[in-house]
Amino acid sequence: MTVHDLVLSGGRVIDPESGLDAVRDVGITGGTVREIGQDLEGSATVDVSGLVVSPGFVDLHSHSQDVPGGRLQALDGVTTALELEAGAFPVEHAYRRAAAAGRPVNYGFSTSWAGARMRVLAGAPPVADLDELLVHVADPRWQAAASPADVERVLGLLEADLAAGALGIGVLVGYAPGTDPSEYLAVAALAARHGVPTYTHARDLVEMTPDVPVDGAEEIVRAAGETGAHMHYCHLNSTSGQHVDRVLALVERVRAEGATVTTEAYPYGAGMTGIGAAFLAPENLHRRGLTPASIGHLALGRRIADADELRRVRSEDPGALAFVHQTDEADPRAFGAVHRALAFPDAAVASDAIAPQWPAGDHDPLRWPLPPQVATHPRTAGTFGRTLRLLVRELGLLSLPEAVRRCTLVPARVVQDAAPAMRRKGRLQPGGDADVTVFDPATVSDRSTYADTTRPSTGIRHVLVGGTFVVRDGELDPGALPGRAVRGG
Image (spheres, one colour):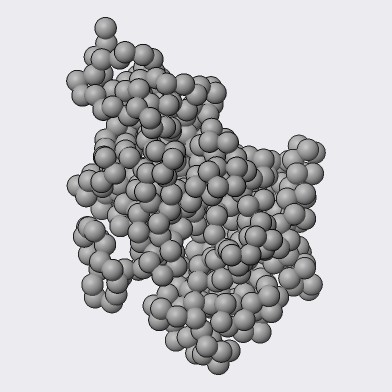
């Protein structure tokens, strides 16, 4: 009989690809799942009776690309956290930096259209993470239409990053409202030629901004149809608001016509972004039904008082992070739009996680537990626990196996054509990577709130990345940094 390095014994094993949902043992050796069966032998055995053993959760949309954020996400069951919406530019710099510092979970990056555009149109330095990108987010030069020559320069930079292993192209077109729609189509065509997805933060919908150059949802699906590109619609709940049903119907129609459009959503009513974003200008708030009081300044720890204060803080520090409270989570009718985005067929769960923010001069990336003054969006720590609590236990919108599929196989399939390594993730079967999450289905839940943003989820019992325990018996191992790069192939 084979003796494995580790056996997870007697748990409810869910593999969303094969449909396995049964009590089994999982044998792990050398960072790989070697066997799933009964009465397996291991040099070490962990009894997981009464718990669910699933593939590690795959987060397509994590801006939390540092050690503290990775730890919070691991405690939420995440084993692979990818920065695909904003991306990084140049992508090789982001990969080198992550490898040098180490990561608790696997990581990977798209190339950043916004970063390349800021470089070409505004002379900005390269940006390897969201904090660096947000420093330039309010610069009107990169938000405007580009000349044909400048578009070609941007496309050239993106193409070089794709050759360097980027996982596709992240497109923050919603932050650059002056962009000509033809440029977006050119970016999609570039992605199609390379066989990689684009990951889009959509423009405004016509219901929000009647004079928008093109409806944000129509732009995404048109690009899929005209170029053949795989268009991934980022945080559809956030950019669609109460118009979710119209957007979902549009996506459903073009899918039926053969277009490849995938979606994602997160289970919160508030977003977070740099306060200098164009759509948060006081004169634009009404388009989303917002007021200055809808915006919570993270560093100030309170809501914005009025339009004058909003103008001042946007001018002083346009990259400062702010909550955007756009959907009342206590209103079942309003929050139902978020539920429908999450329950939409084949929608991935994705967090839009934000790296924990430290007070000036007090940043210690290896300190654990995090000190109370460190803050982020609660979705960084709680997205997957909240999804399992809300959509499975409380609302019954998804079965447990289907919710696991939305957290694992669905996101892995979005990326796997660009990165063959993703074919070994999001599944729990022999030959796959030993990225495994073990949780208690009766108690798994988020604990982070808008007032206490970094409280880890509960019910996540064990998390293994490449066969290494990052979380064991509900406790994080601060010394565990087994995360590996996921690159385009």
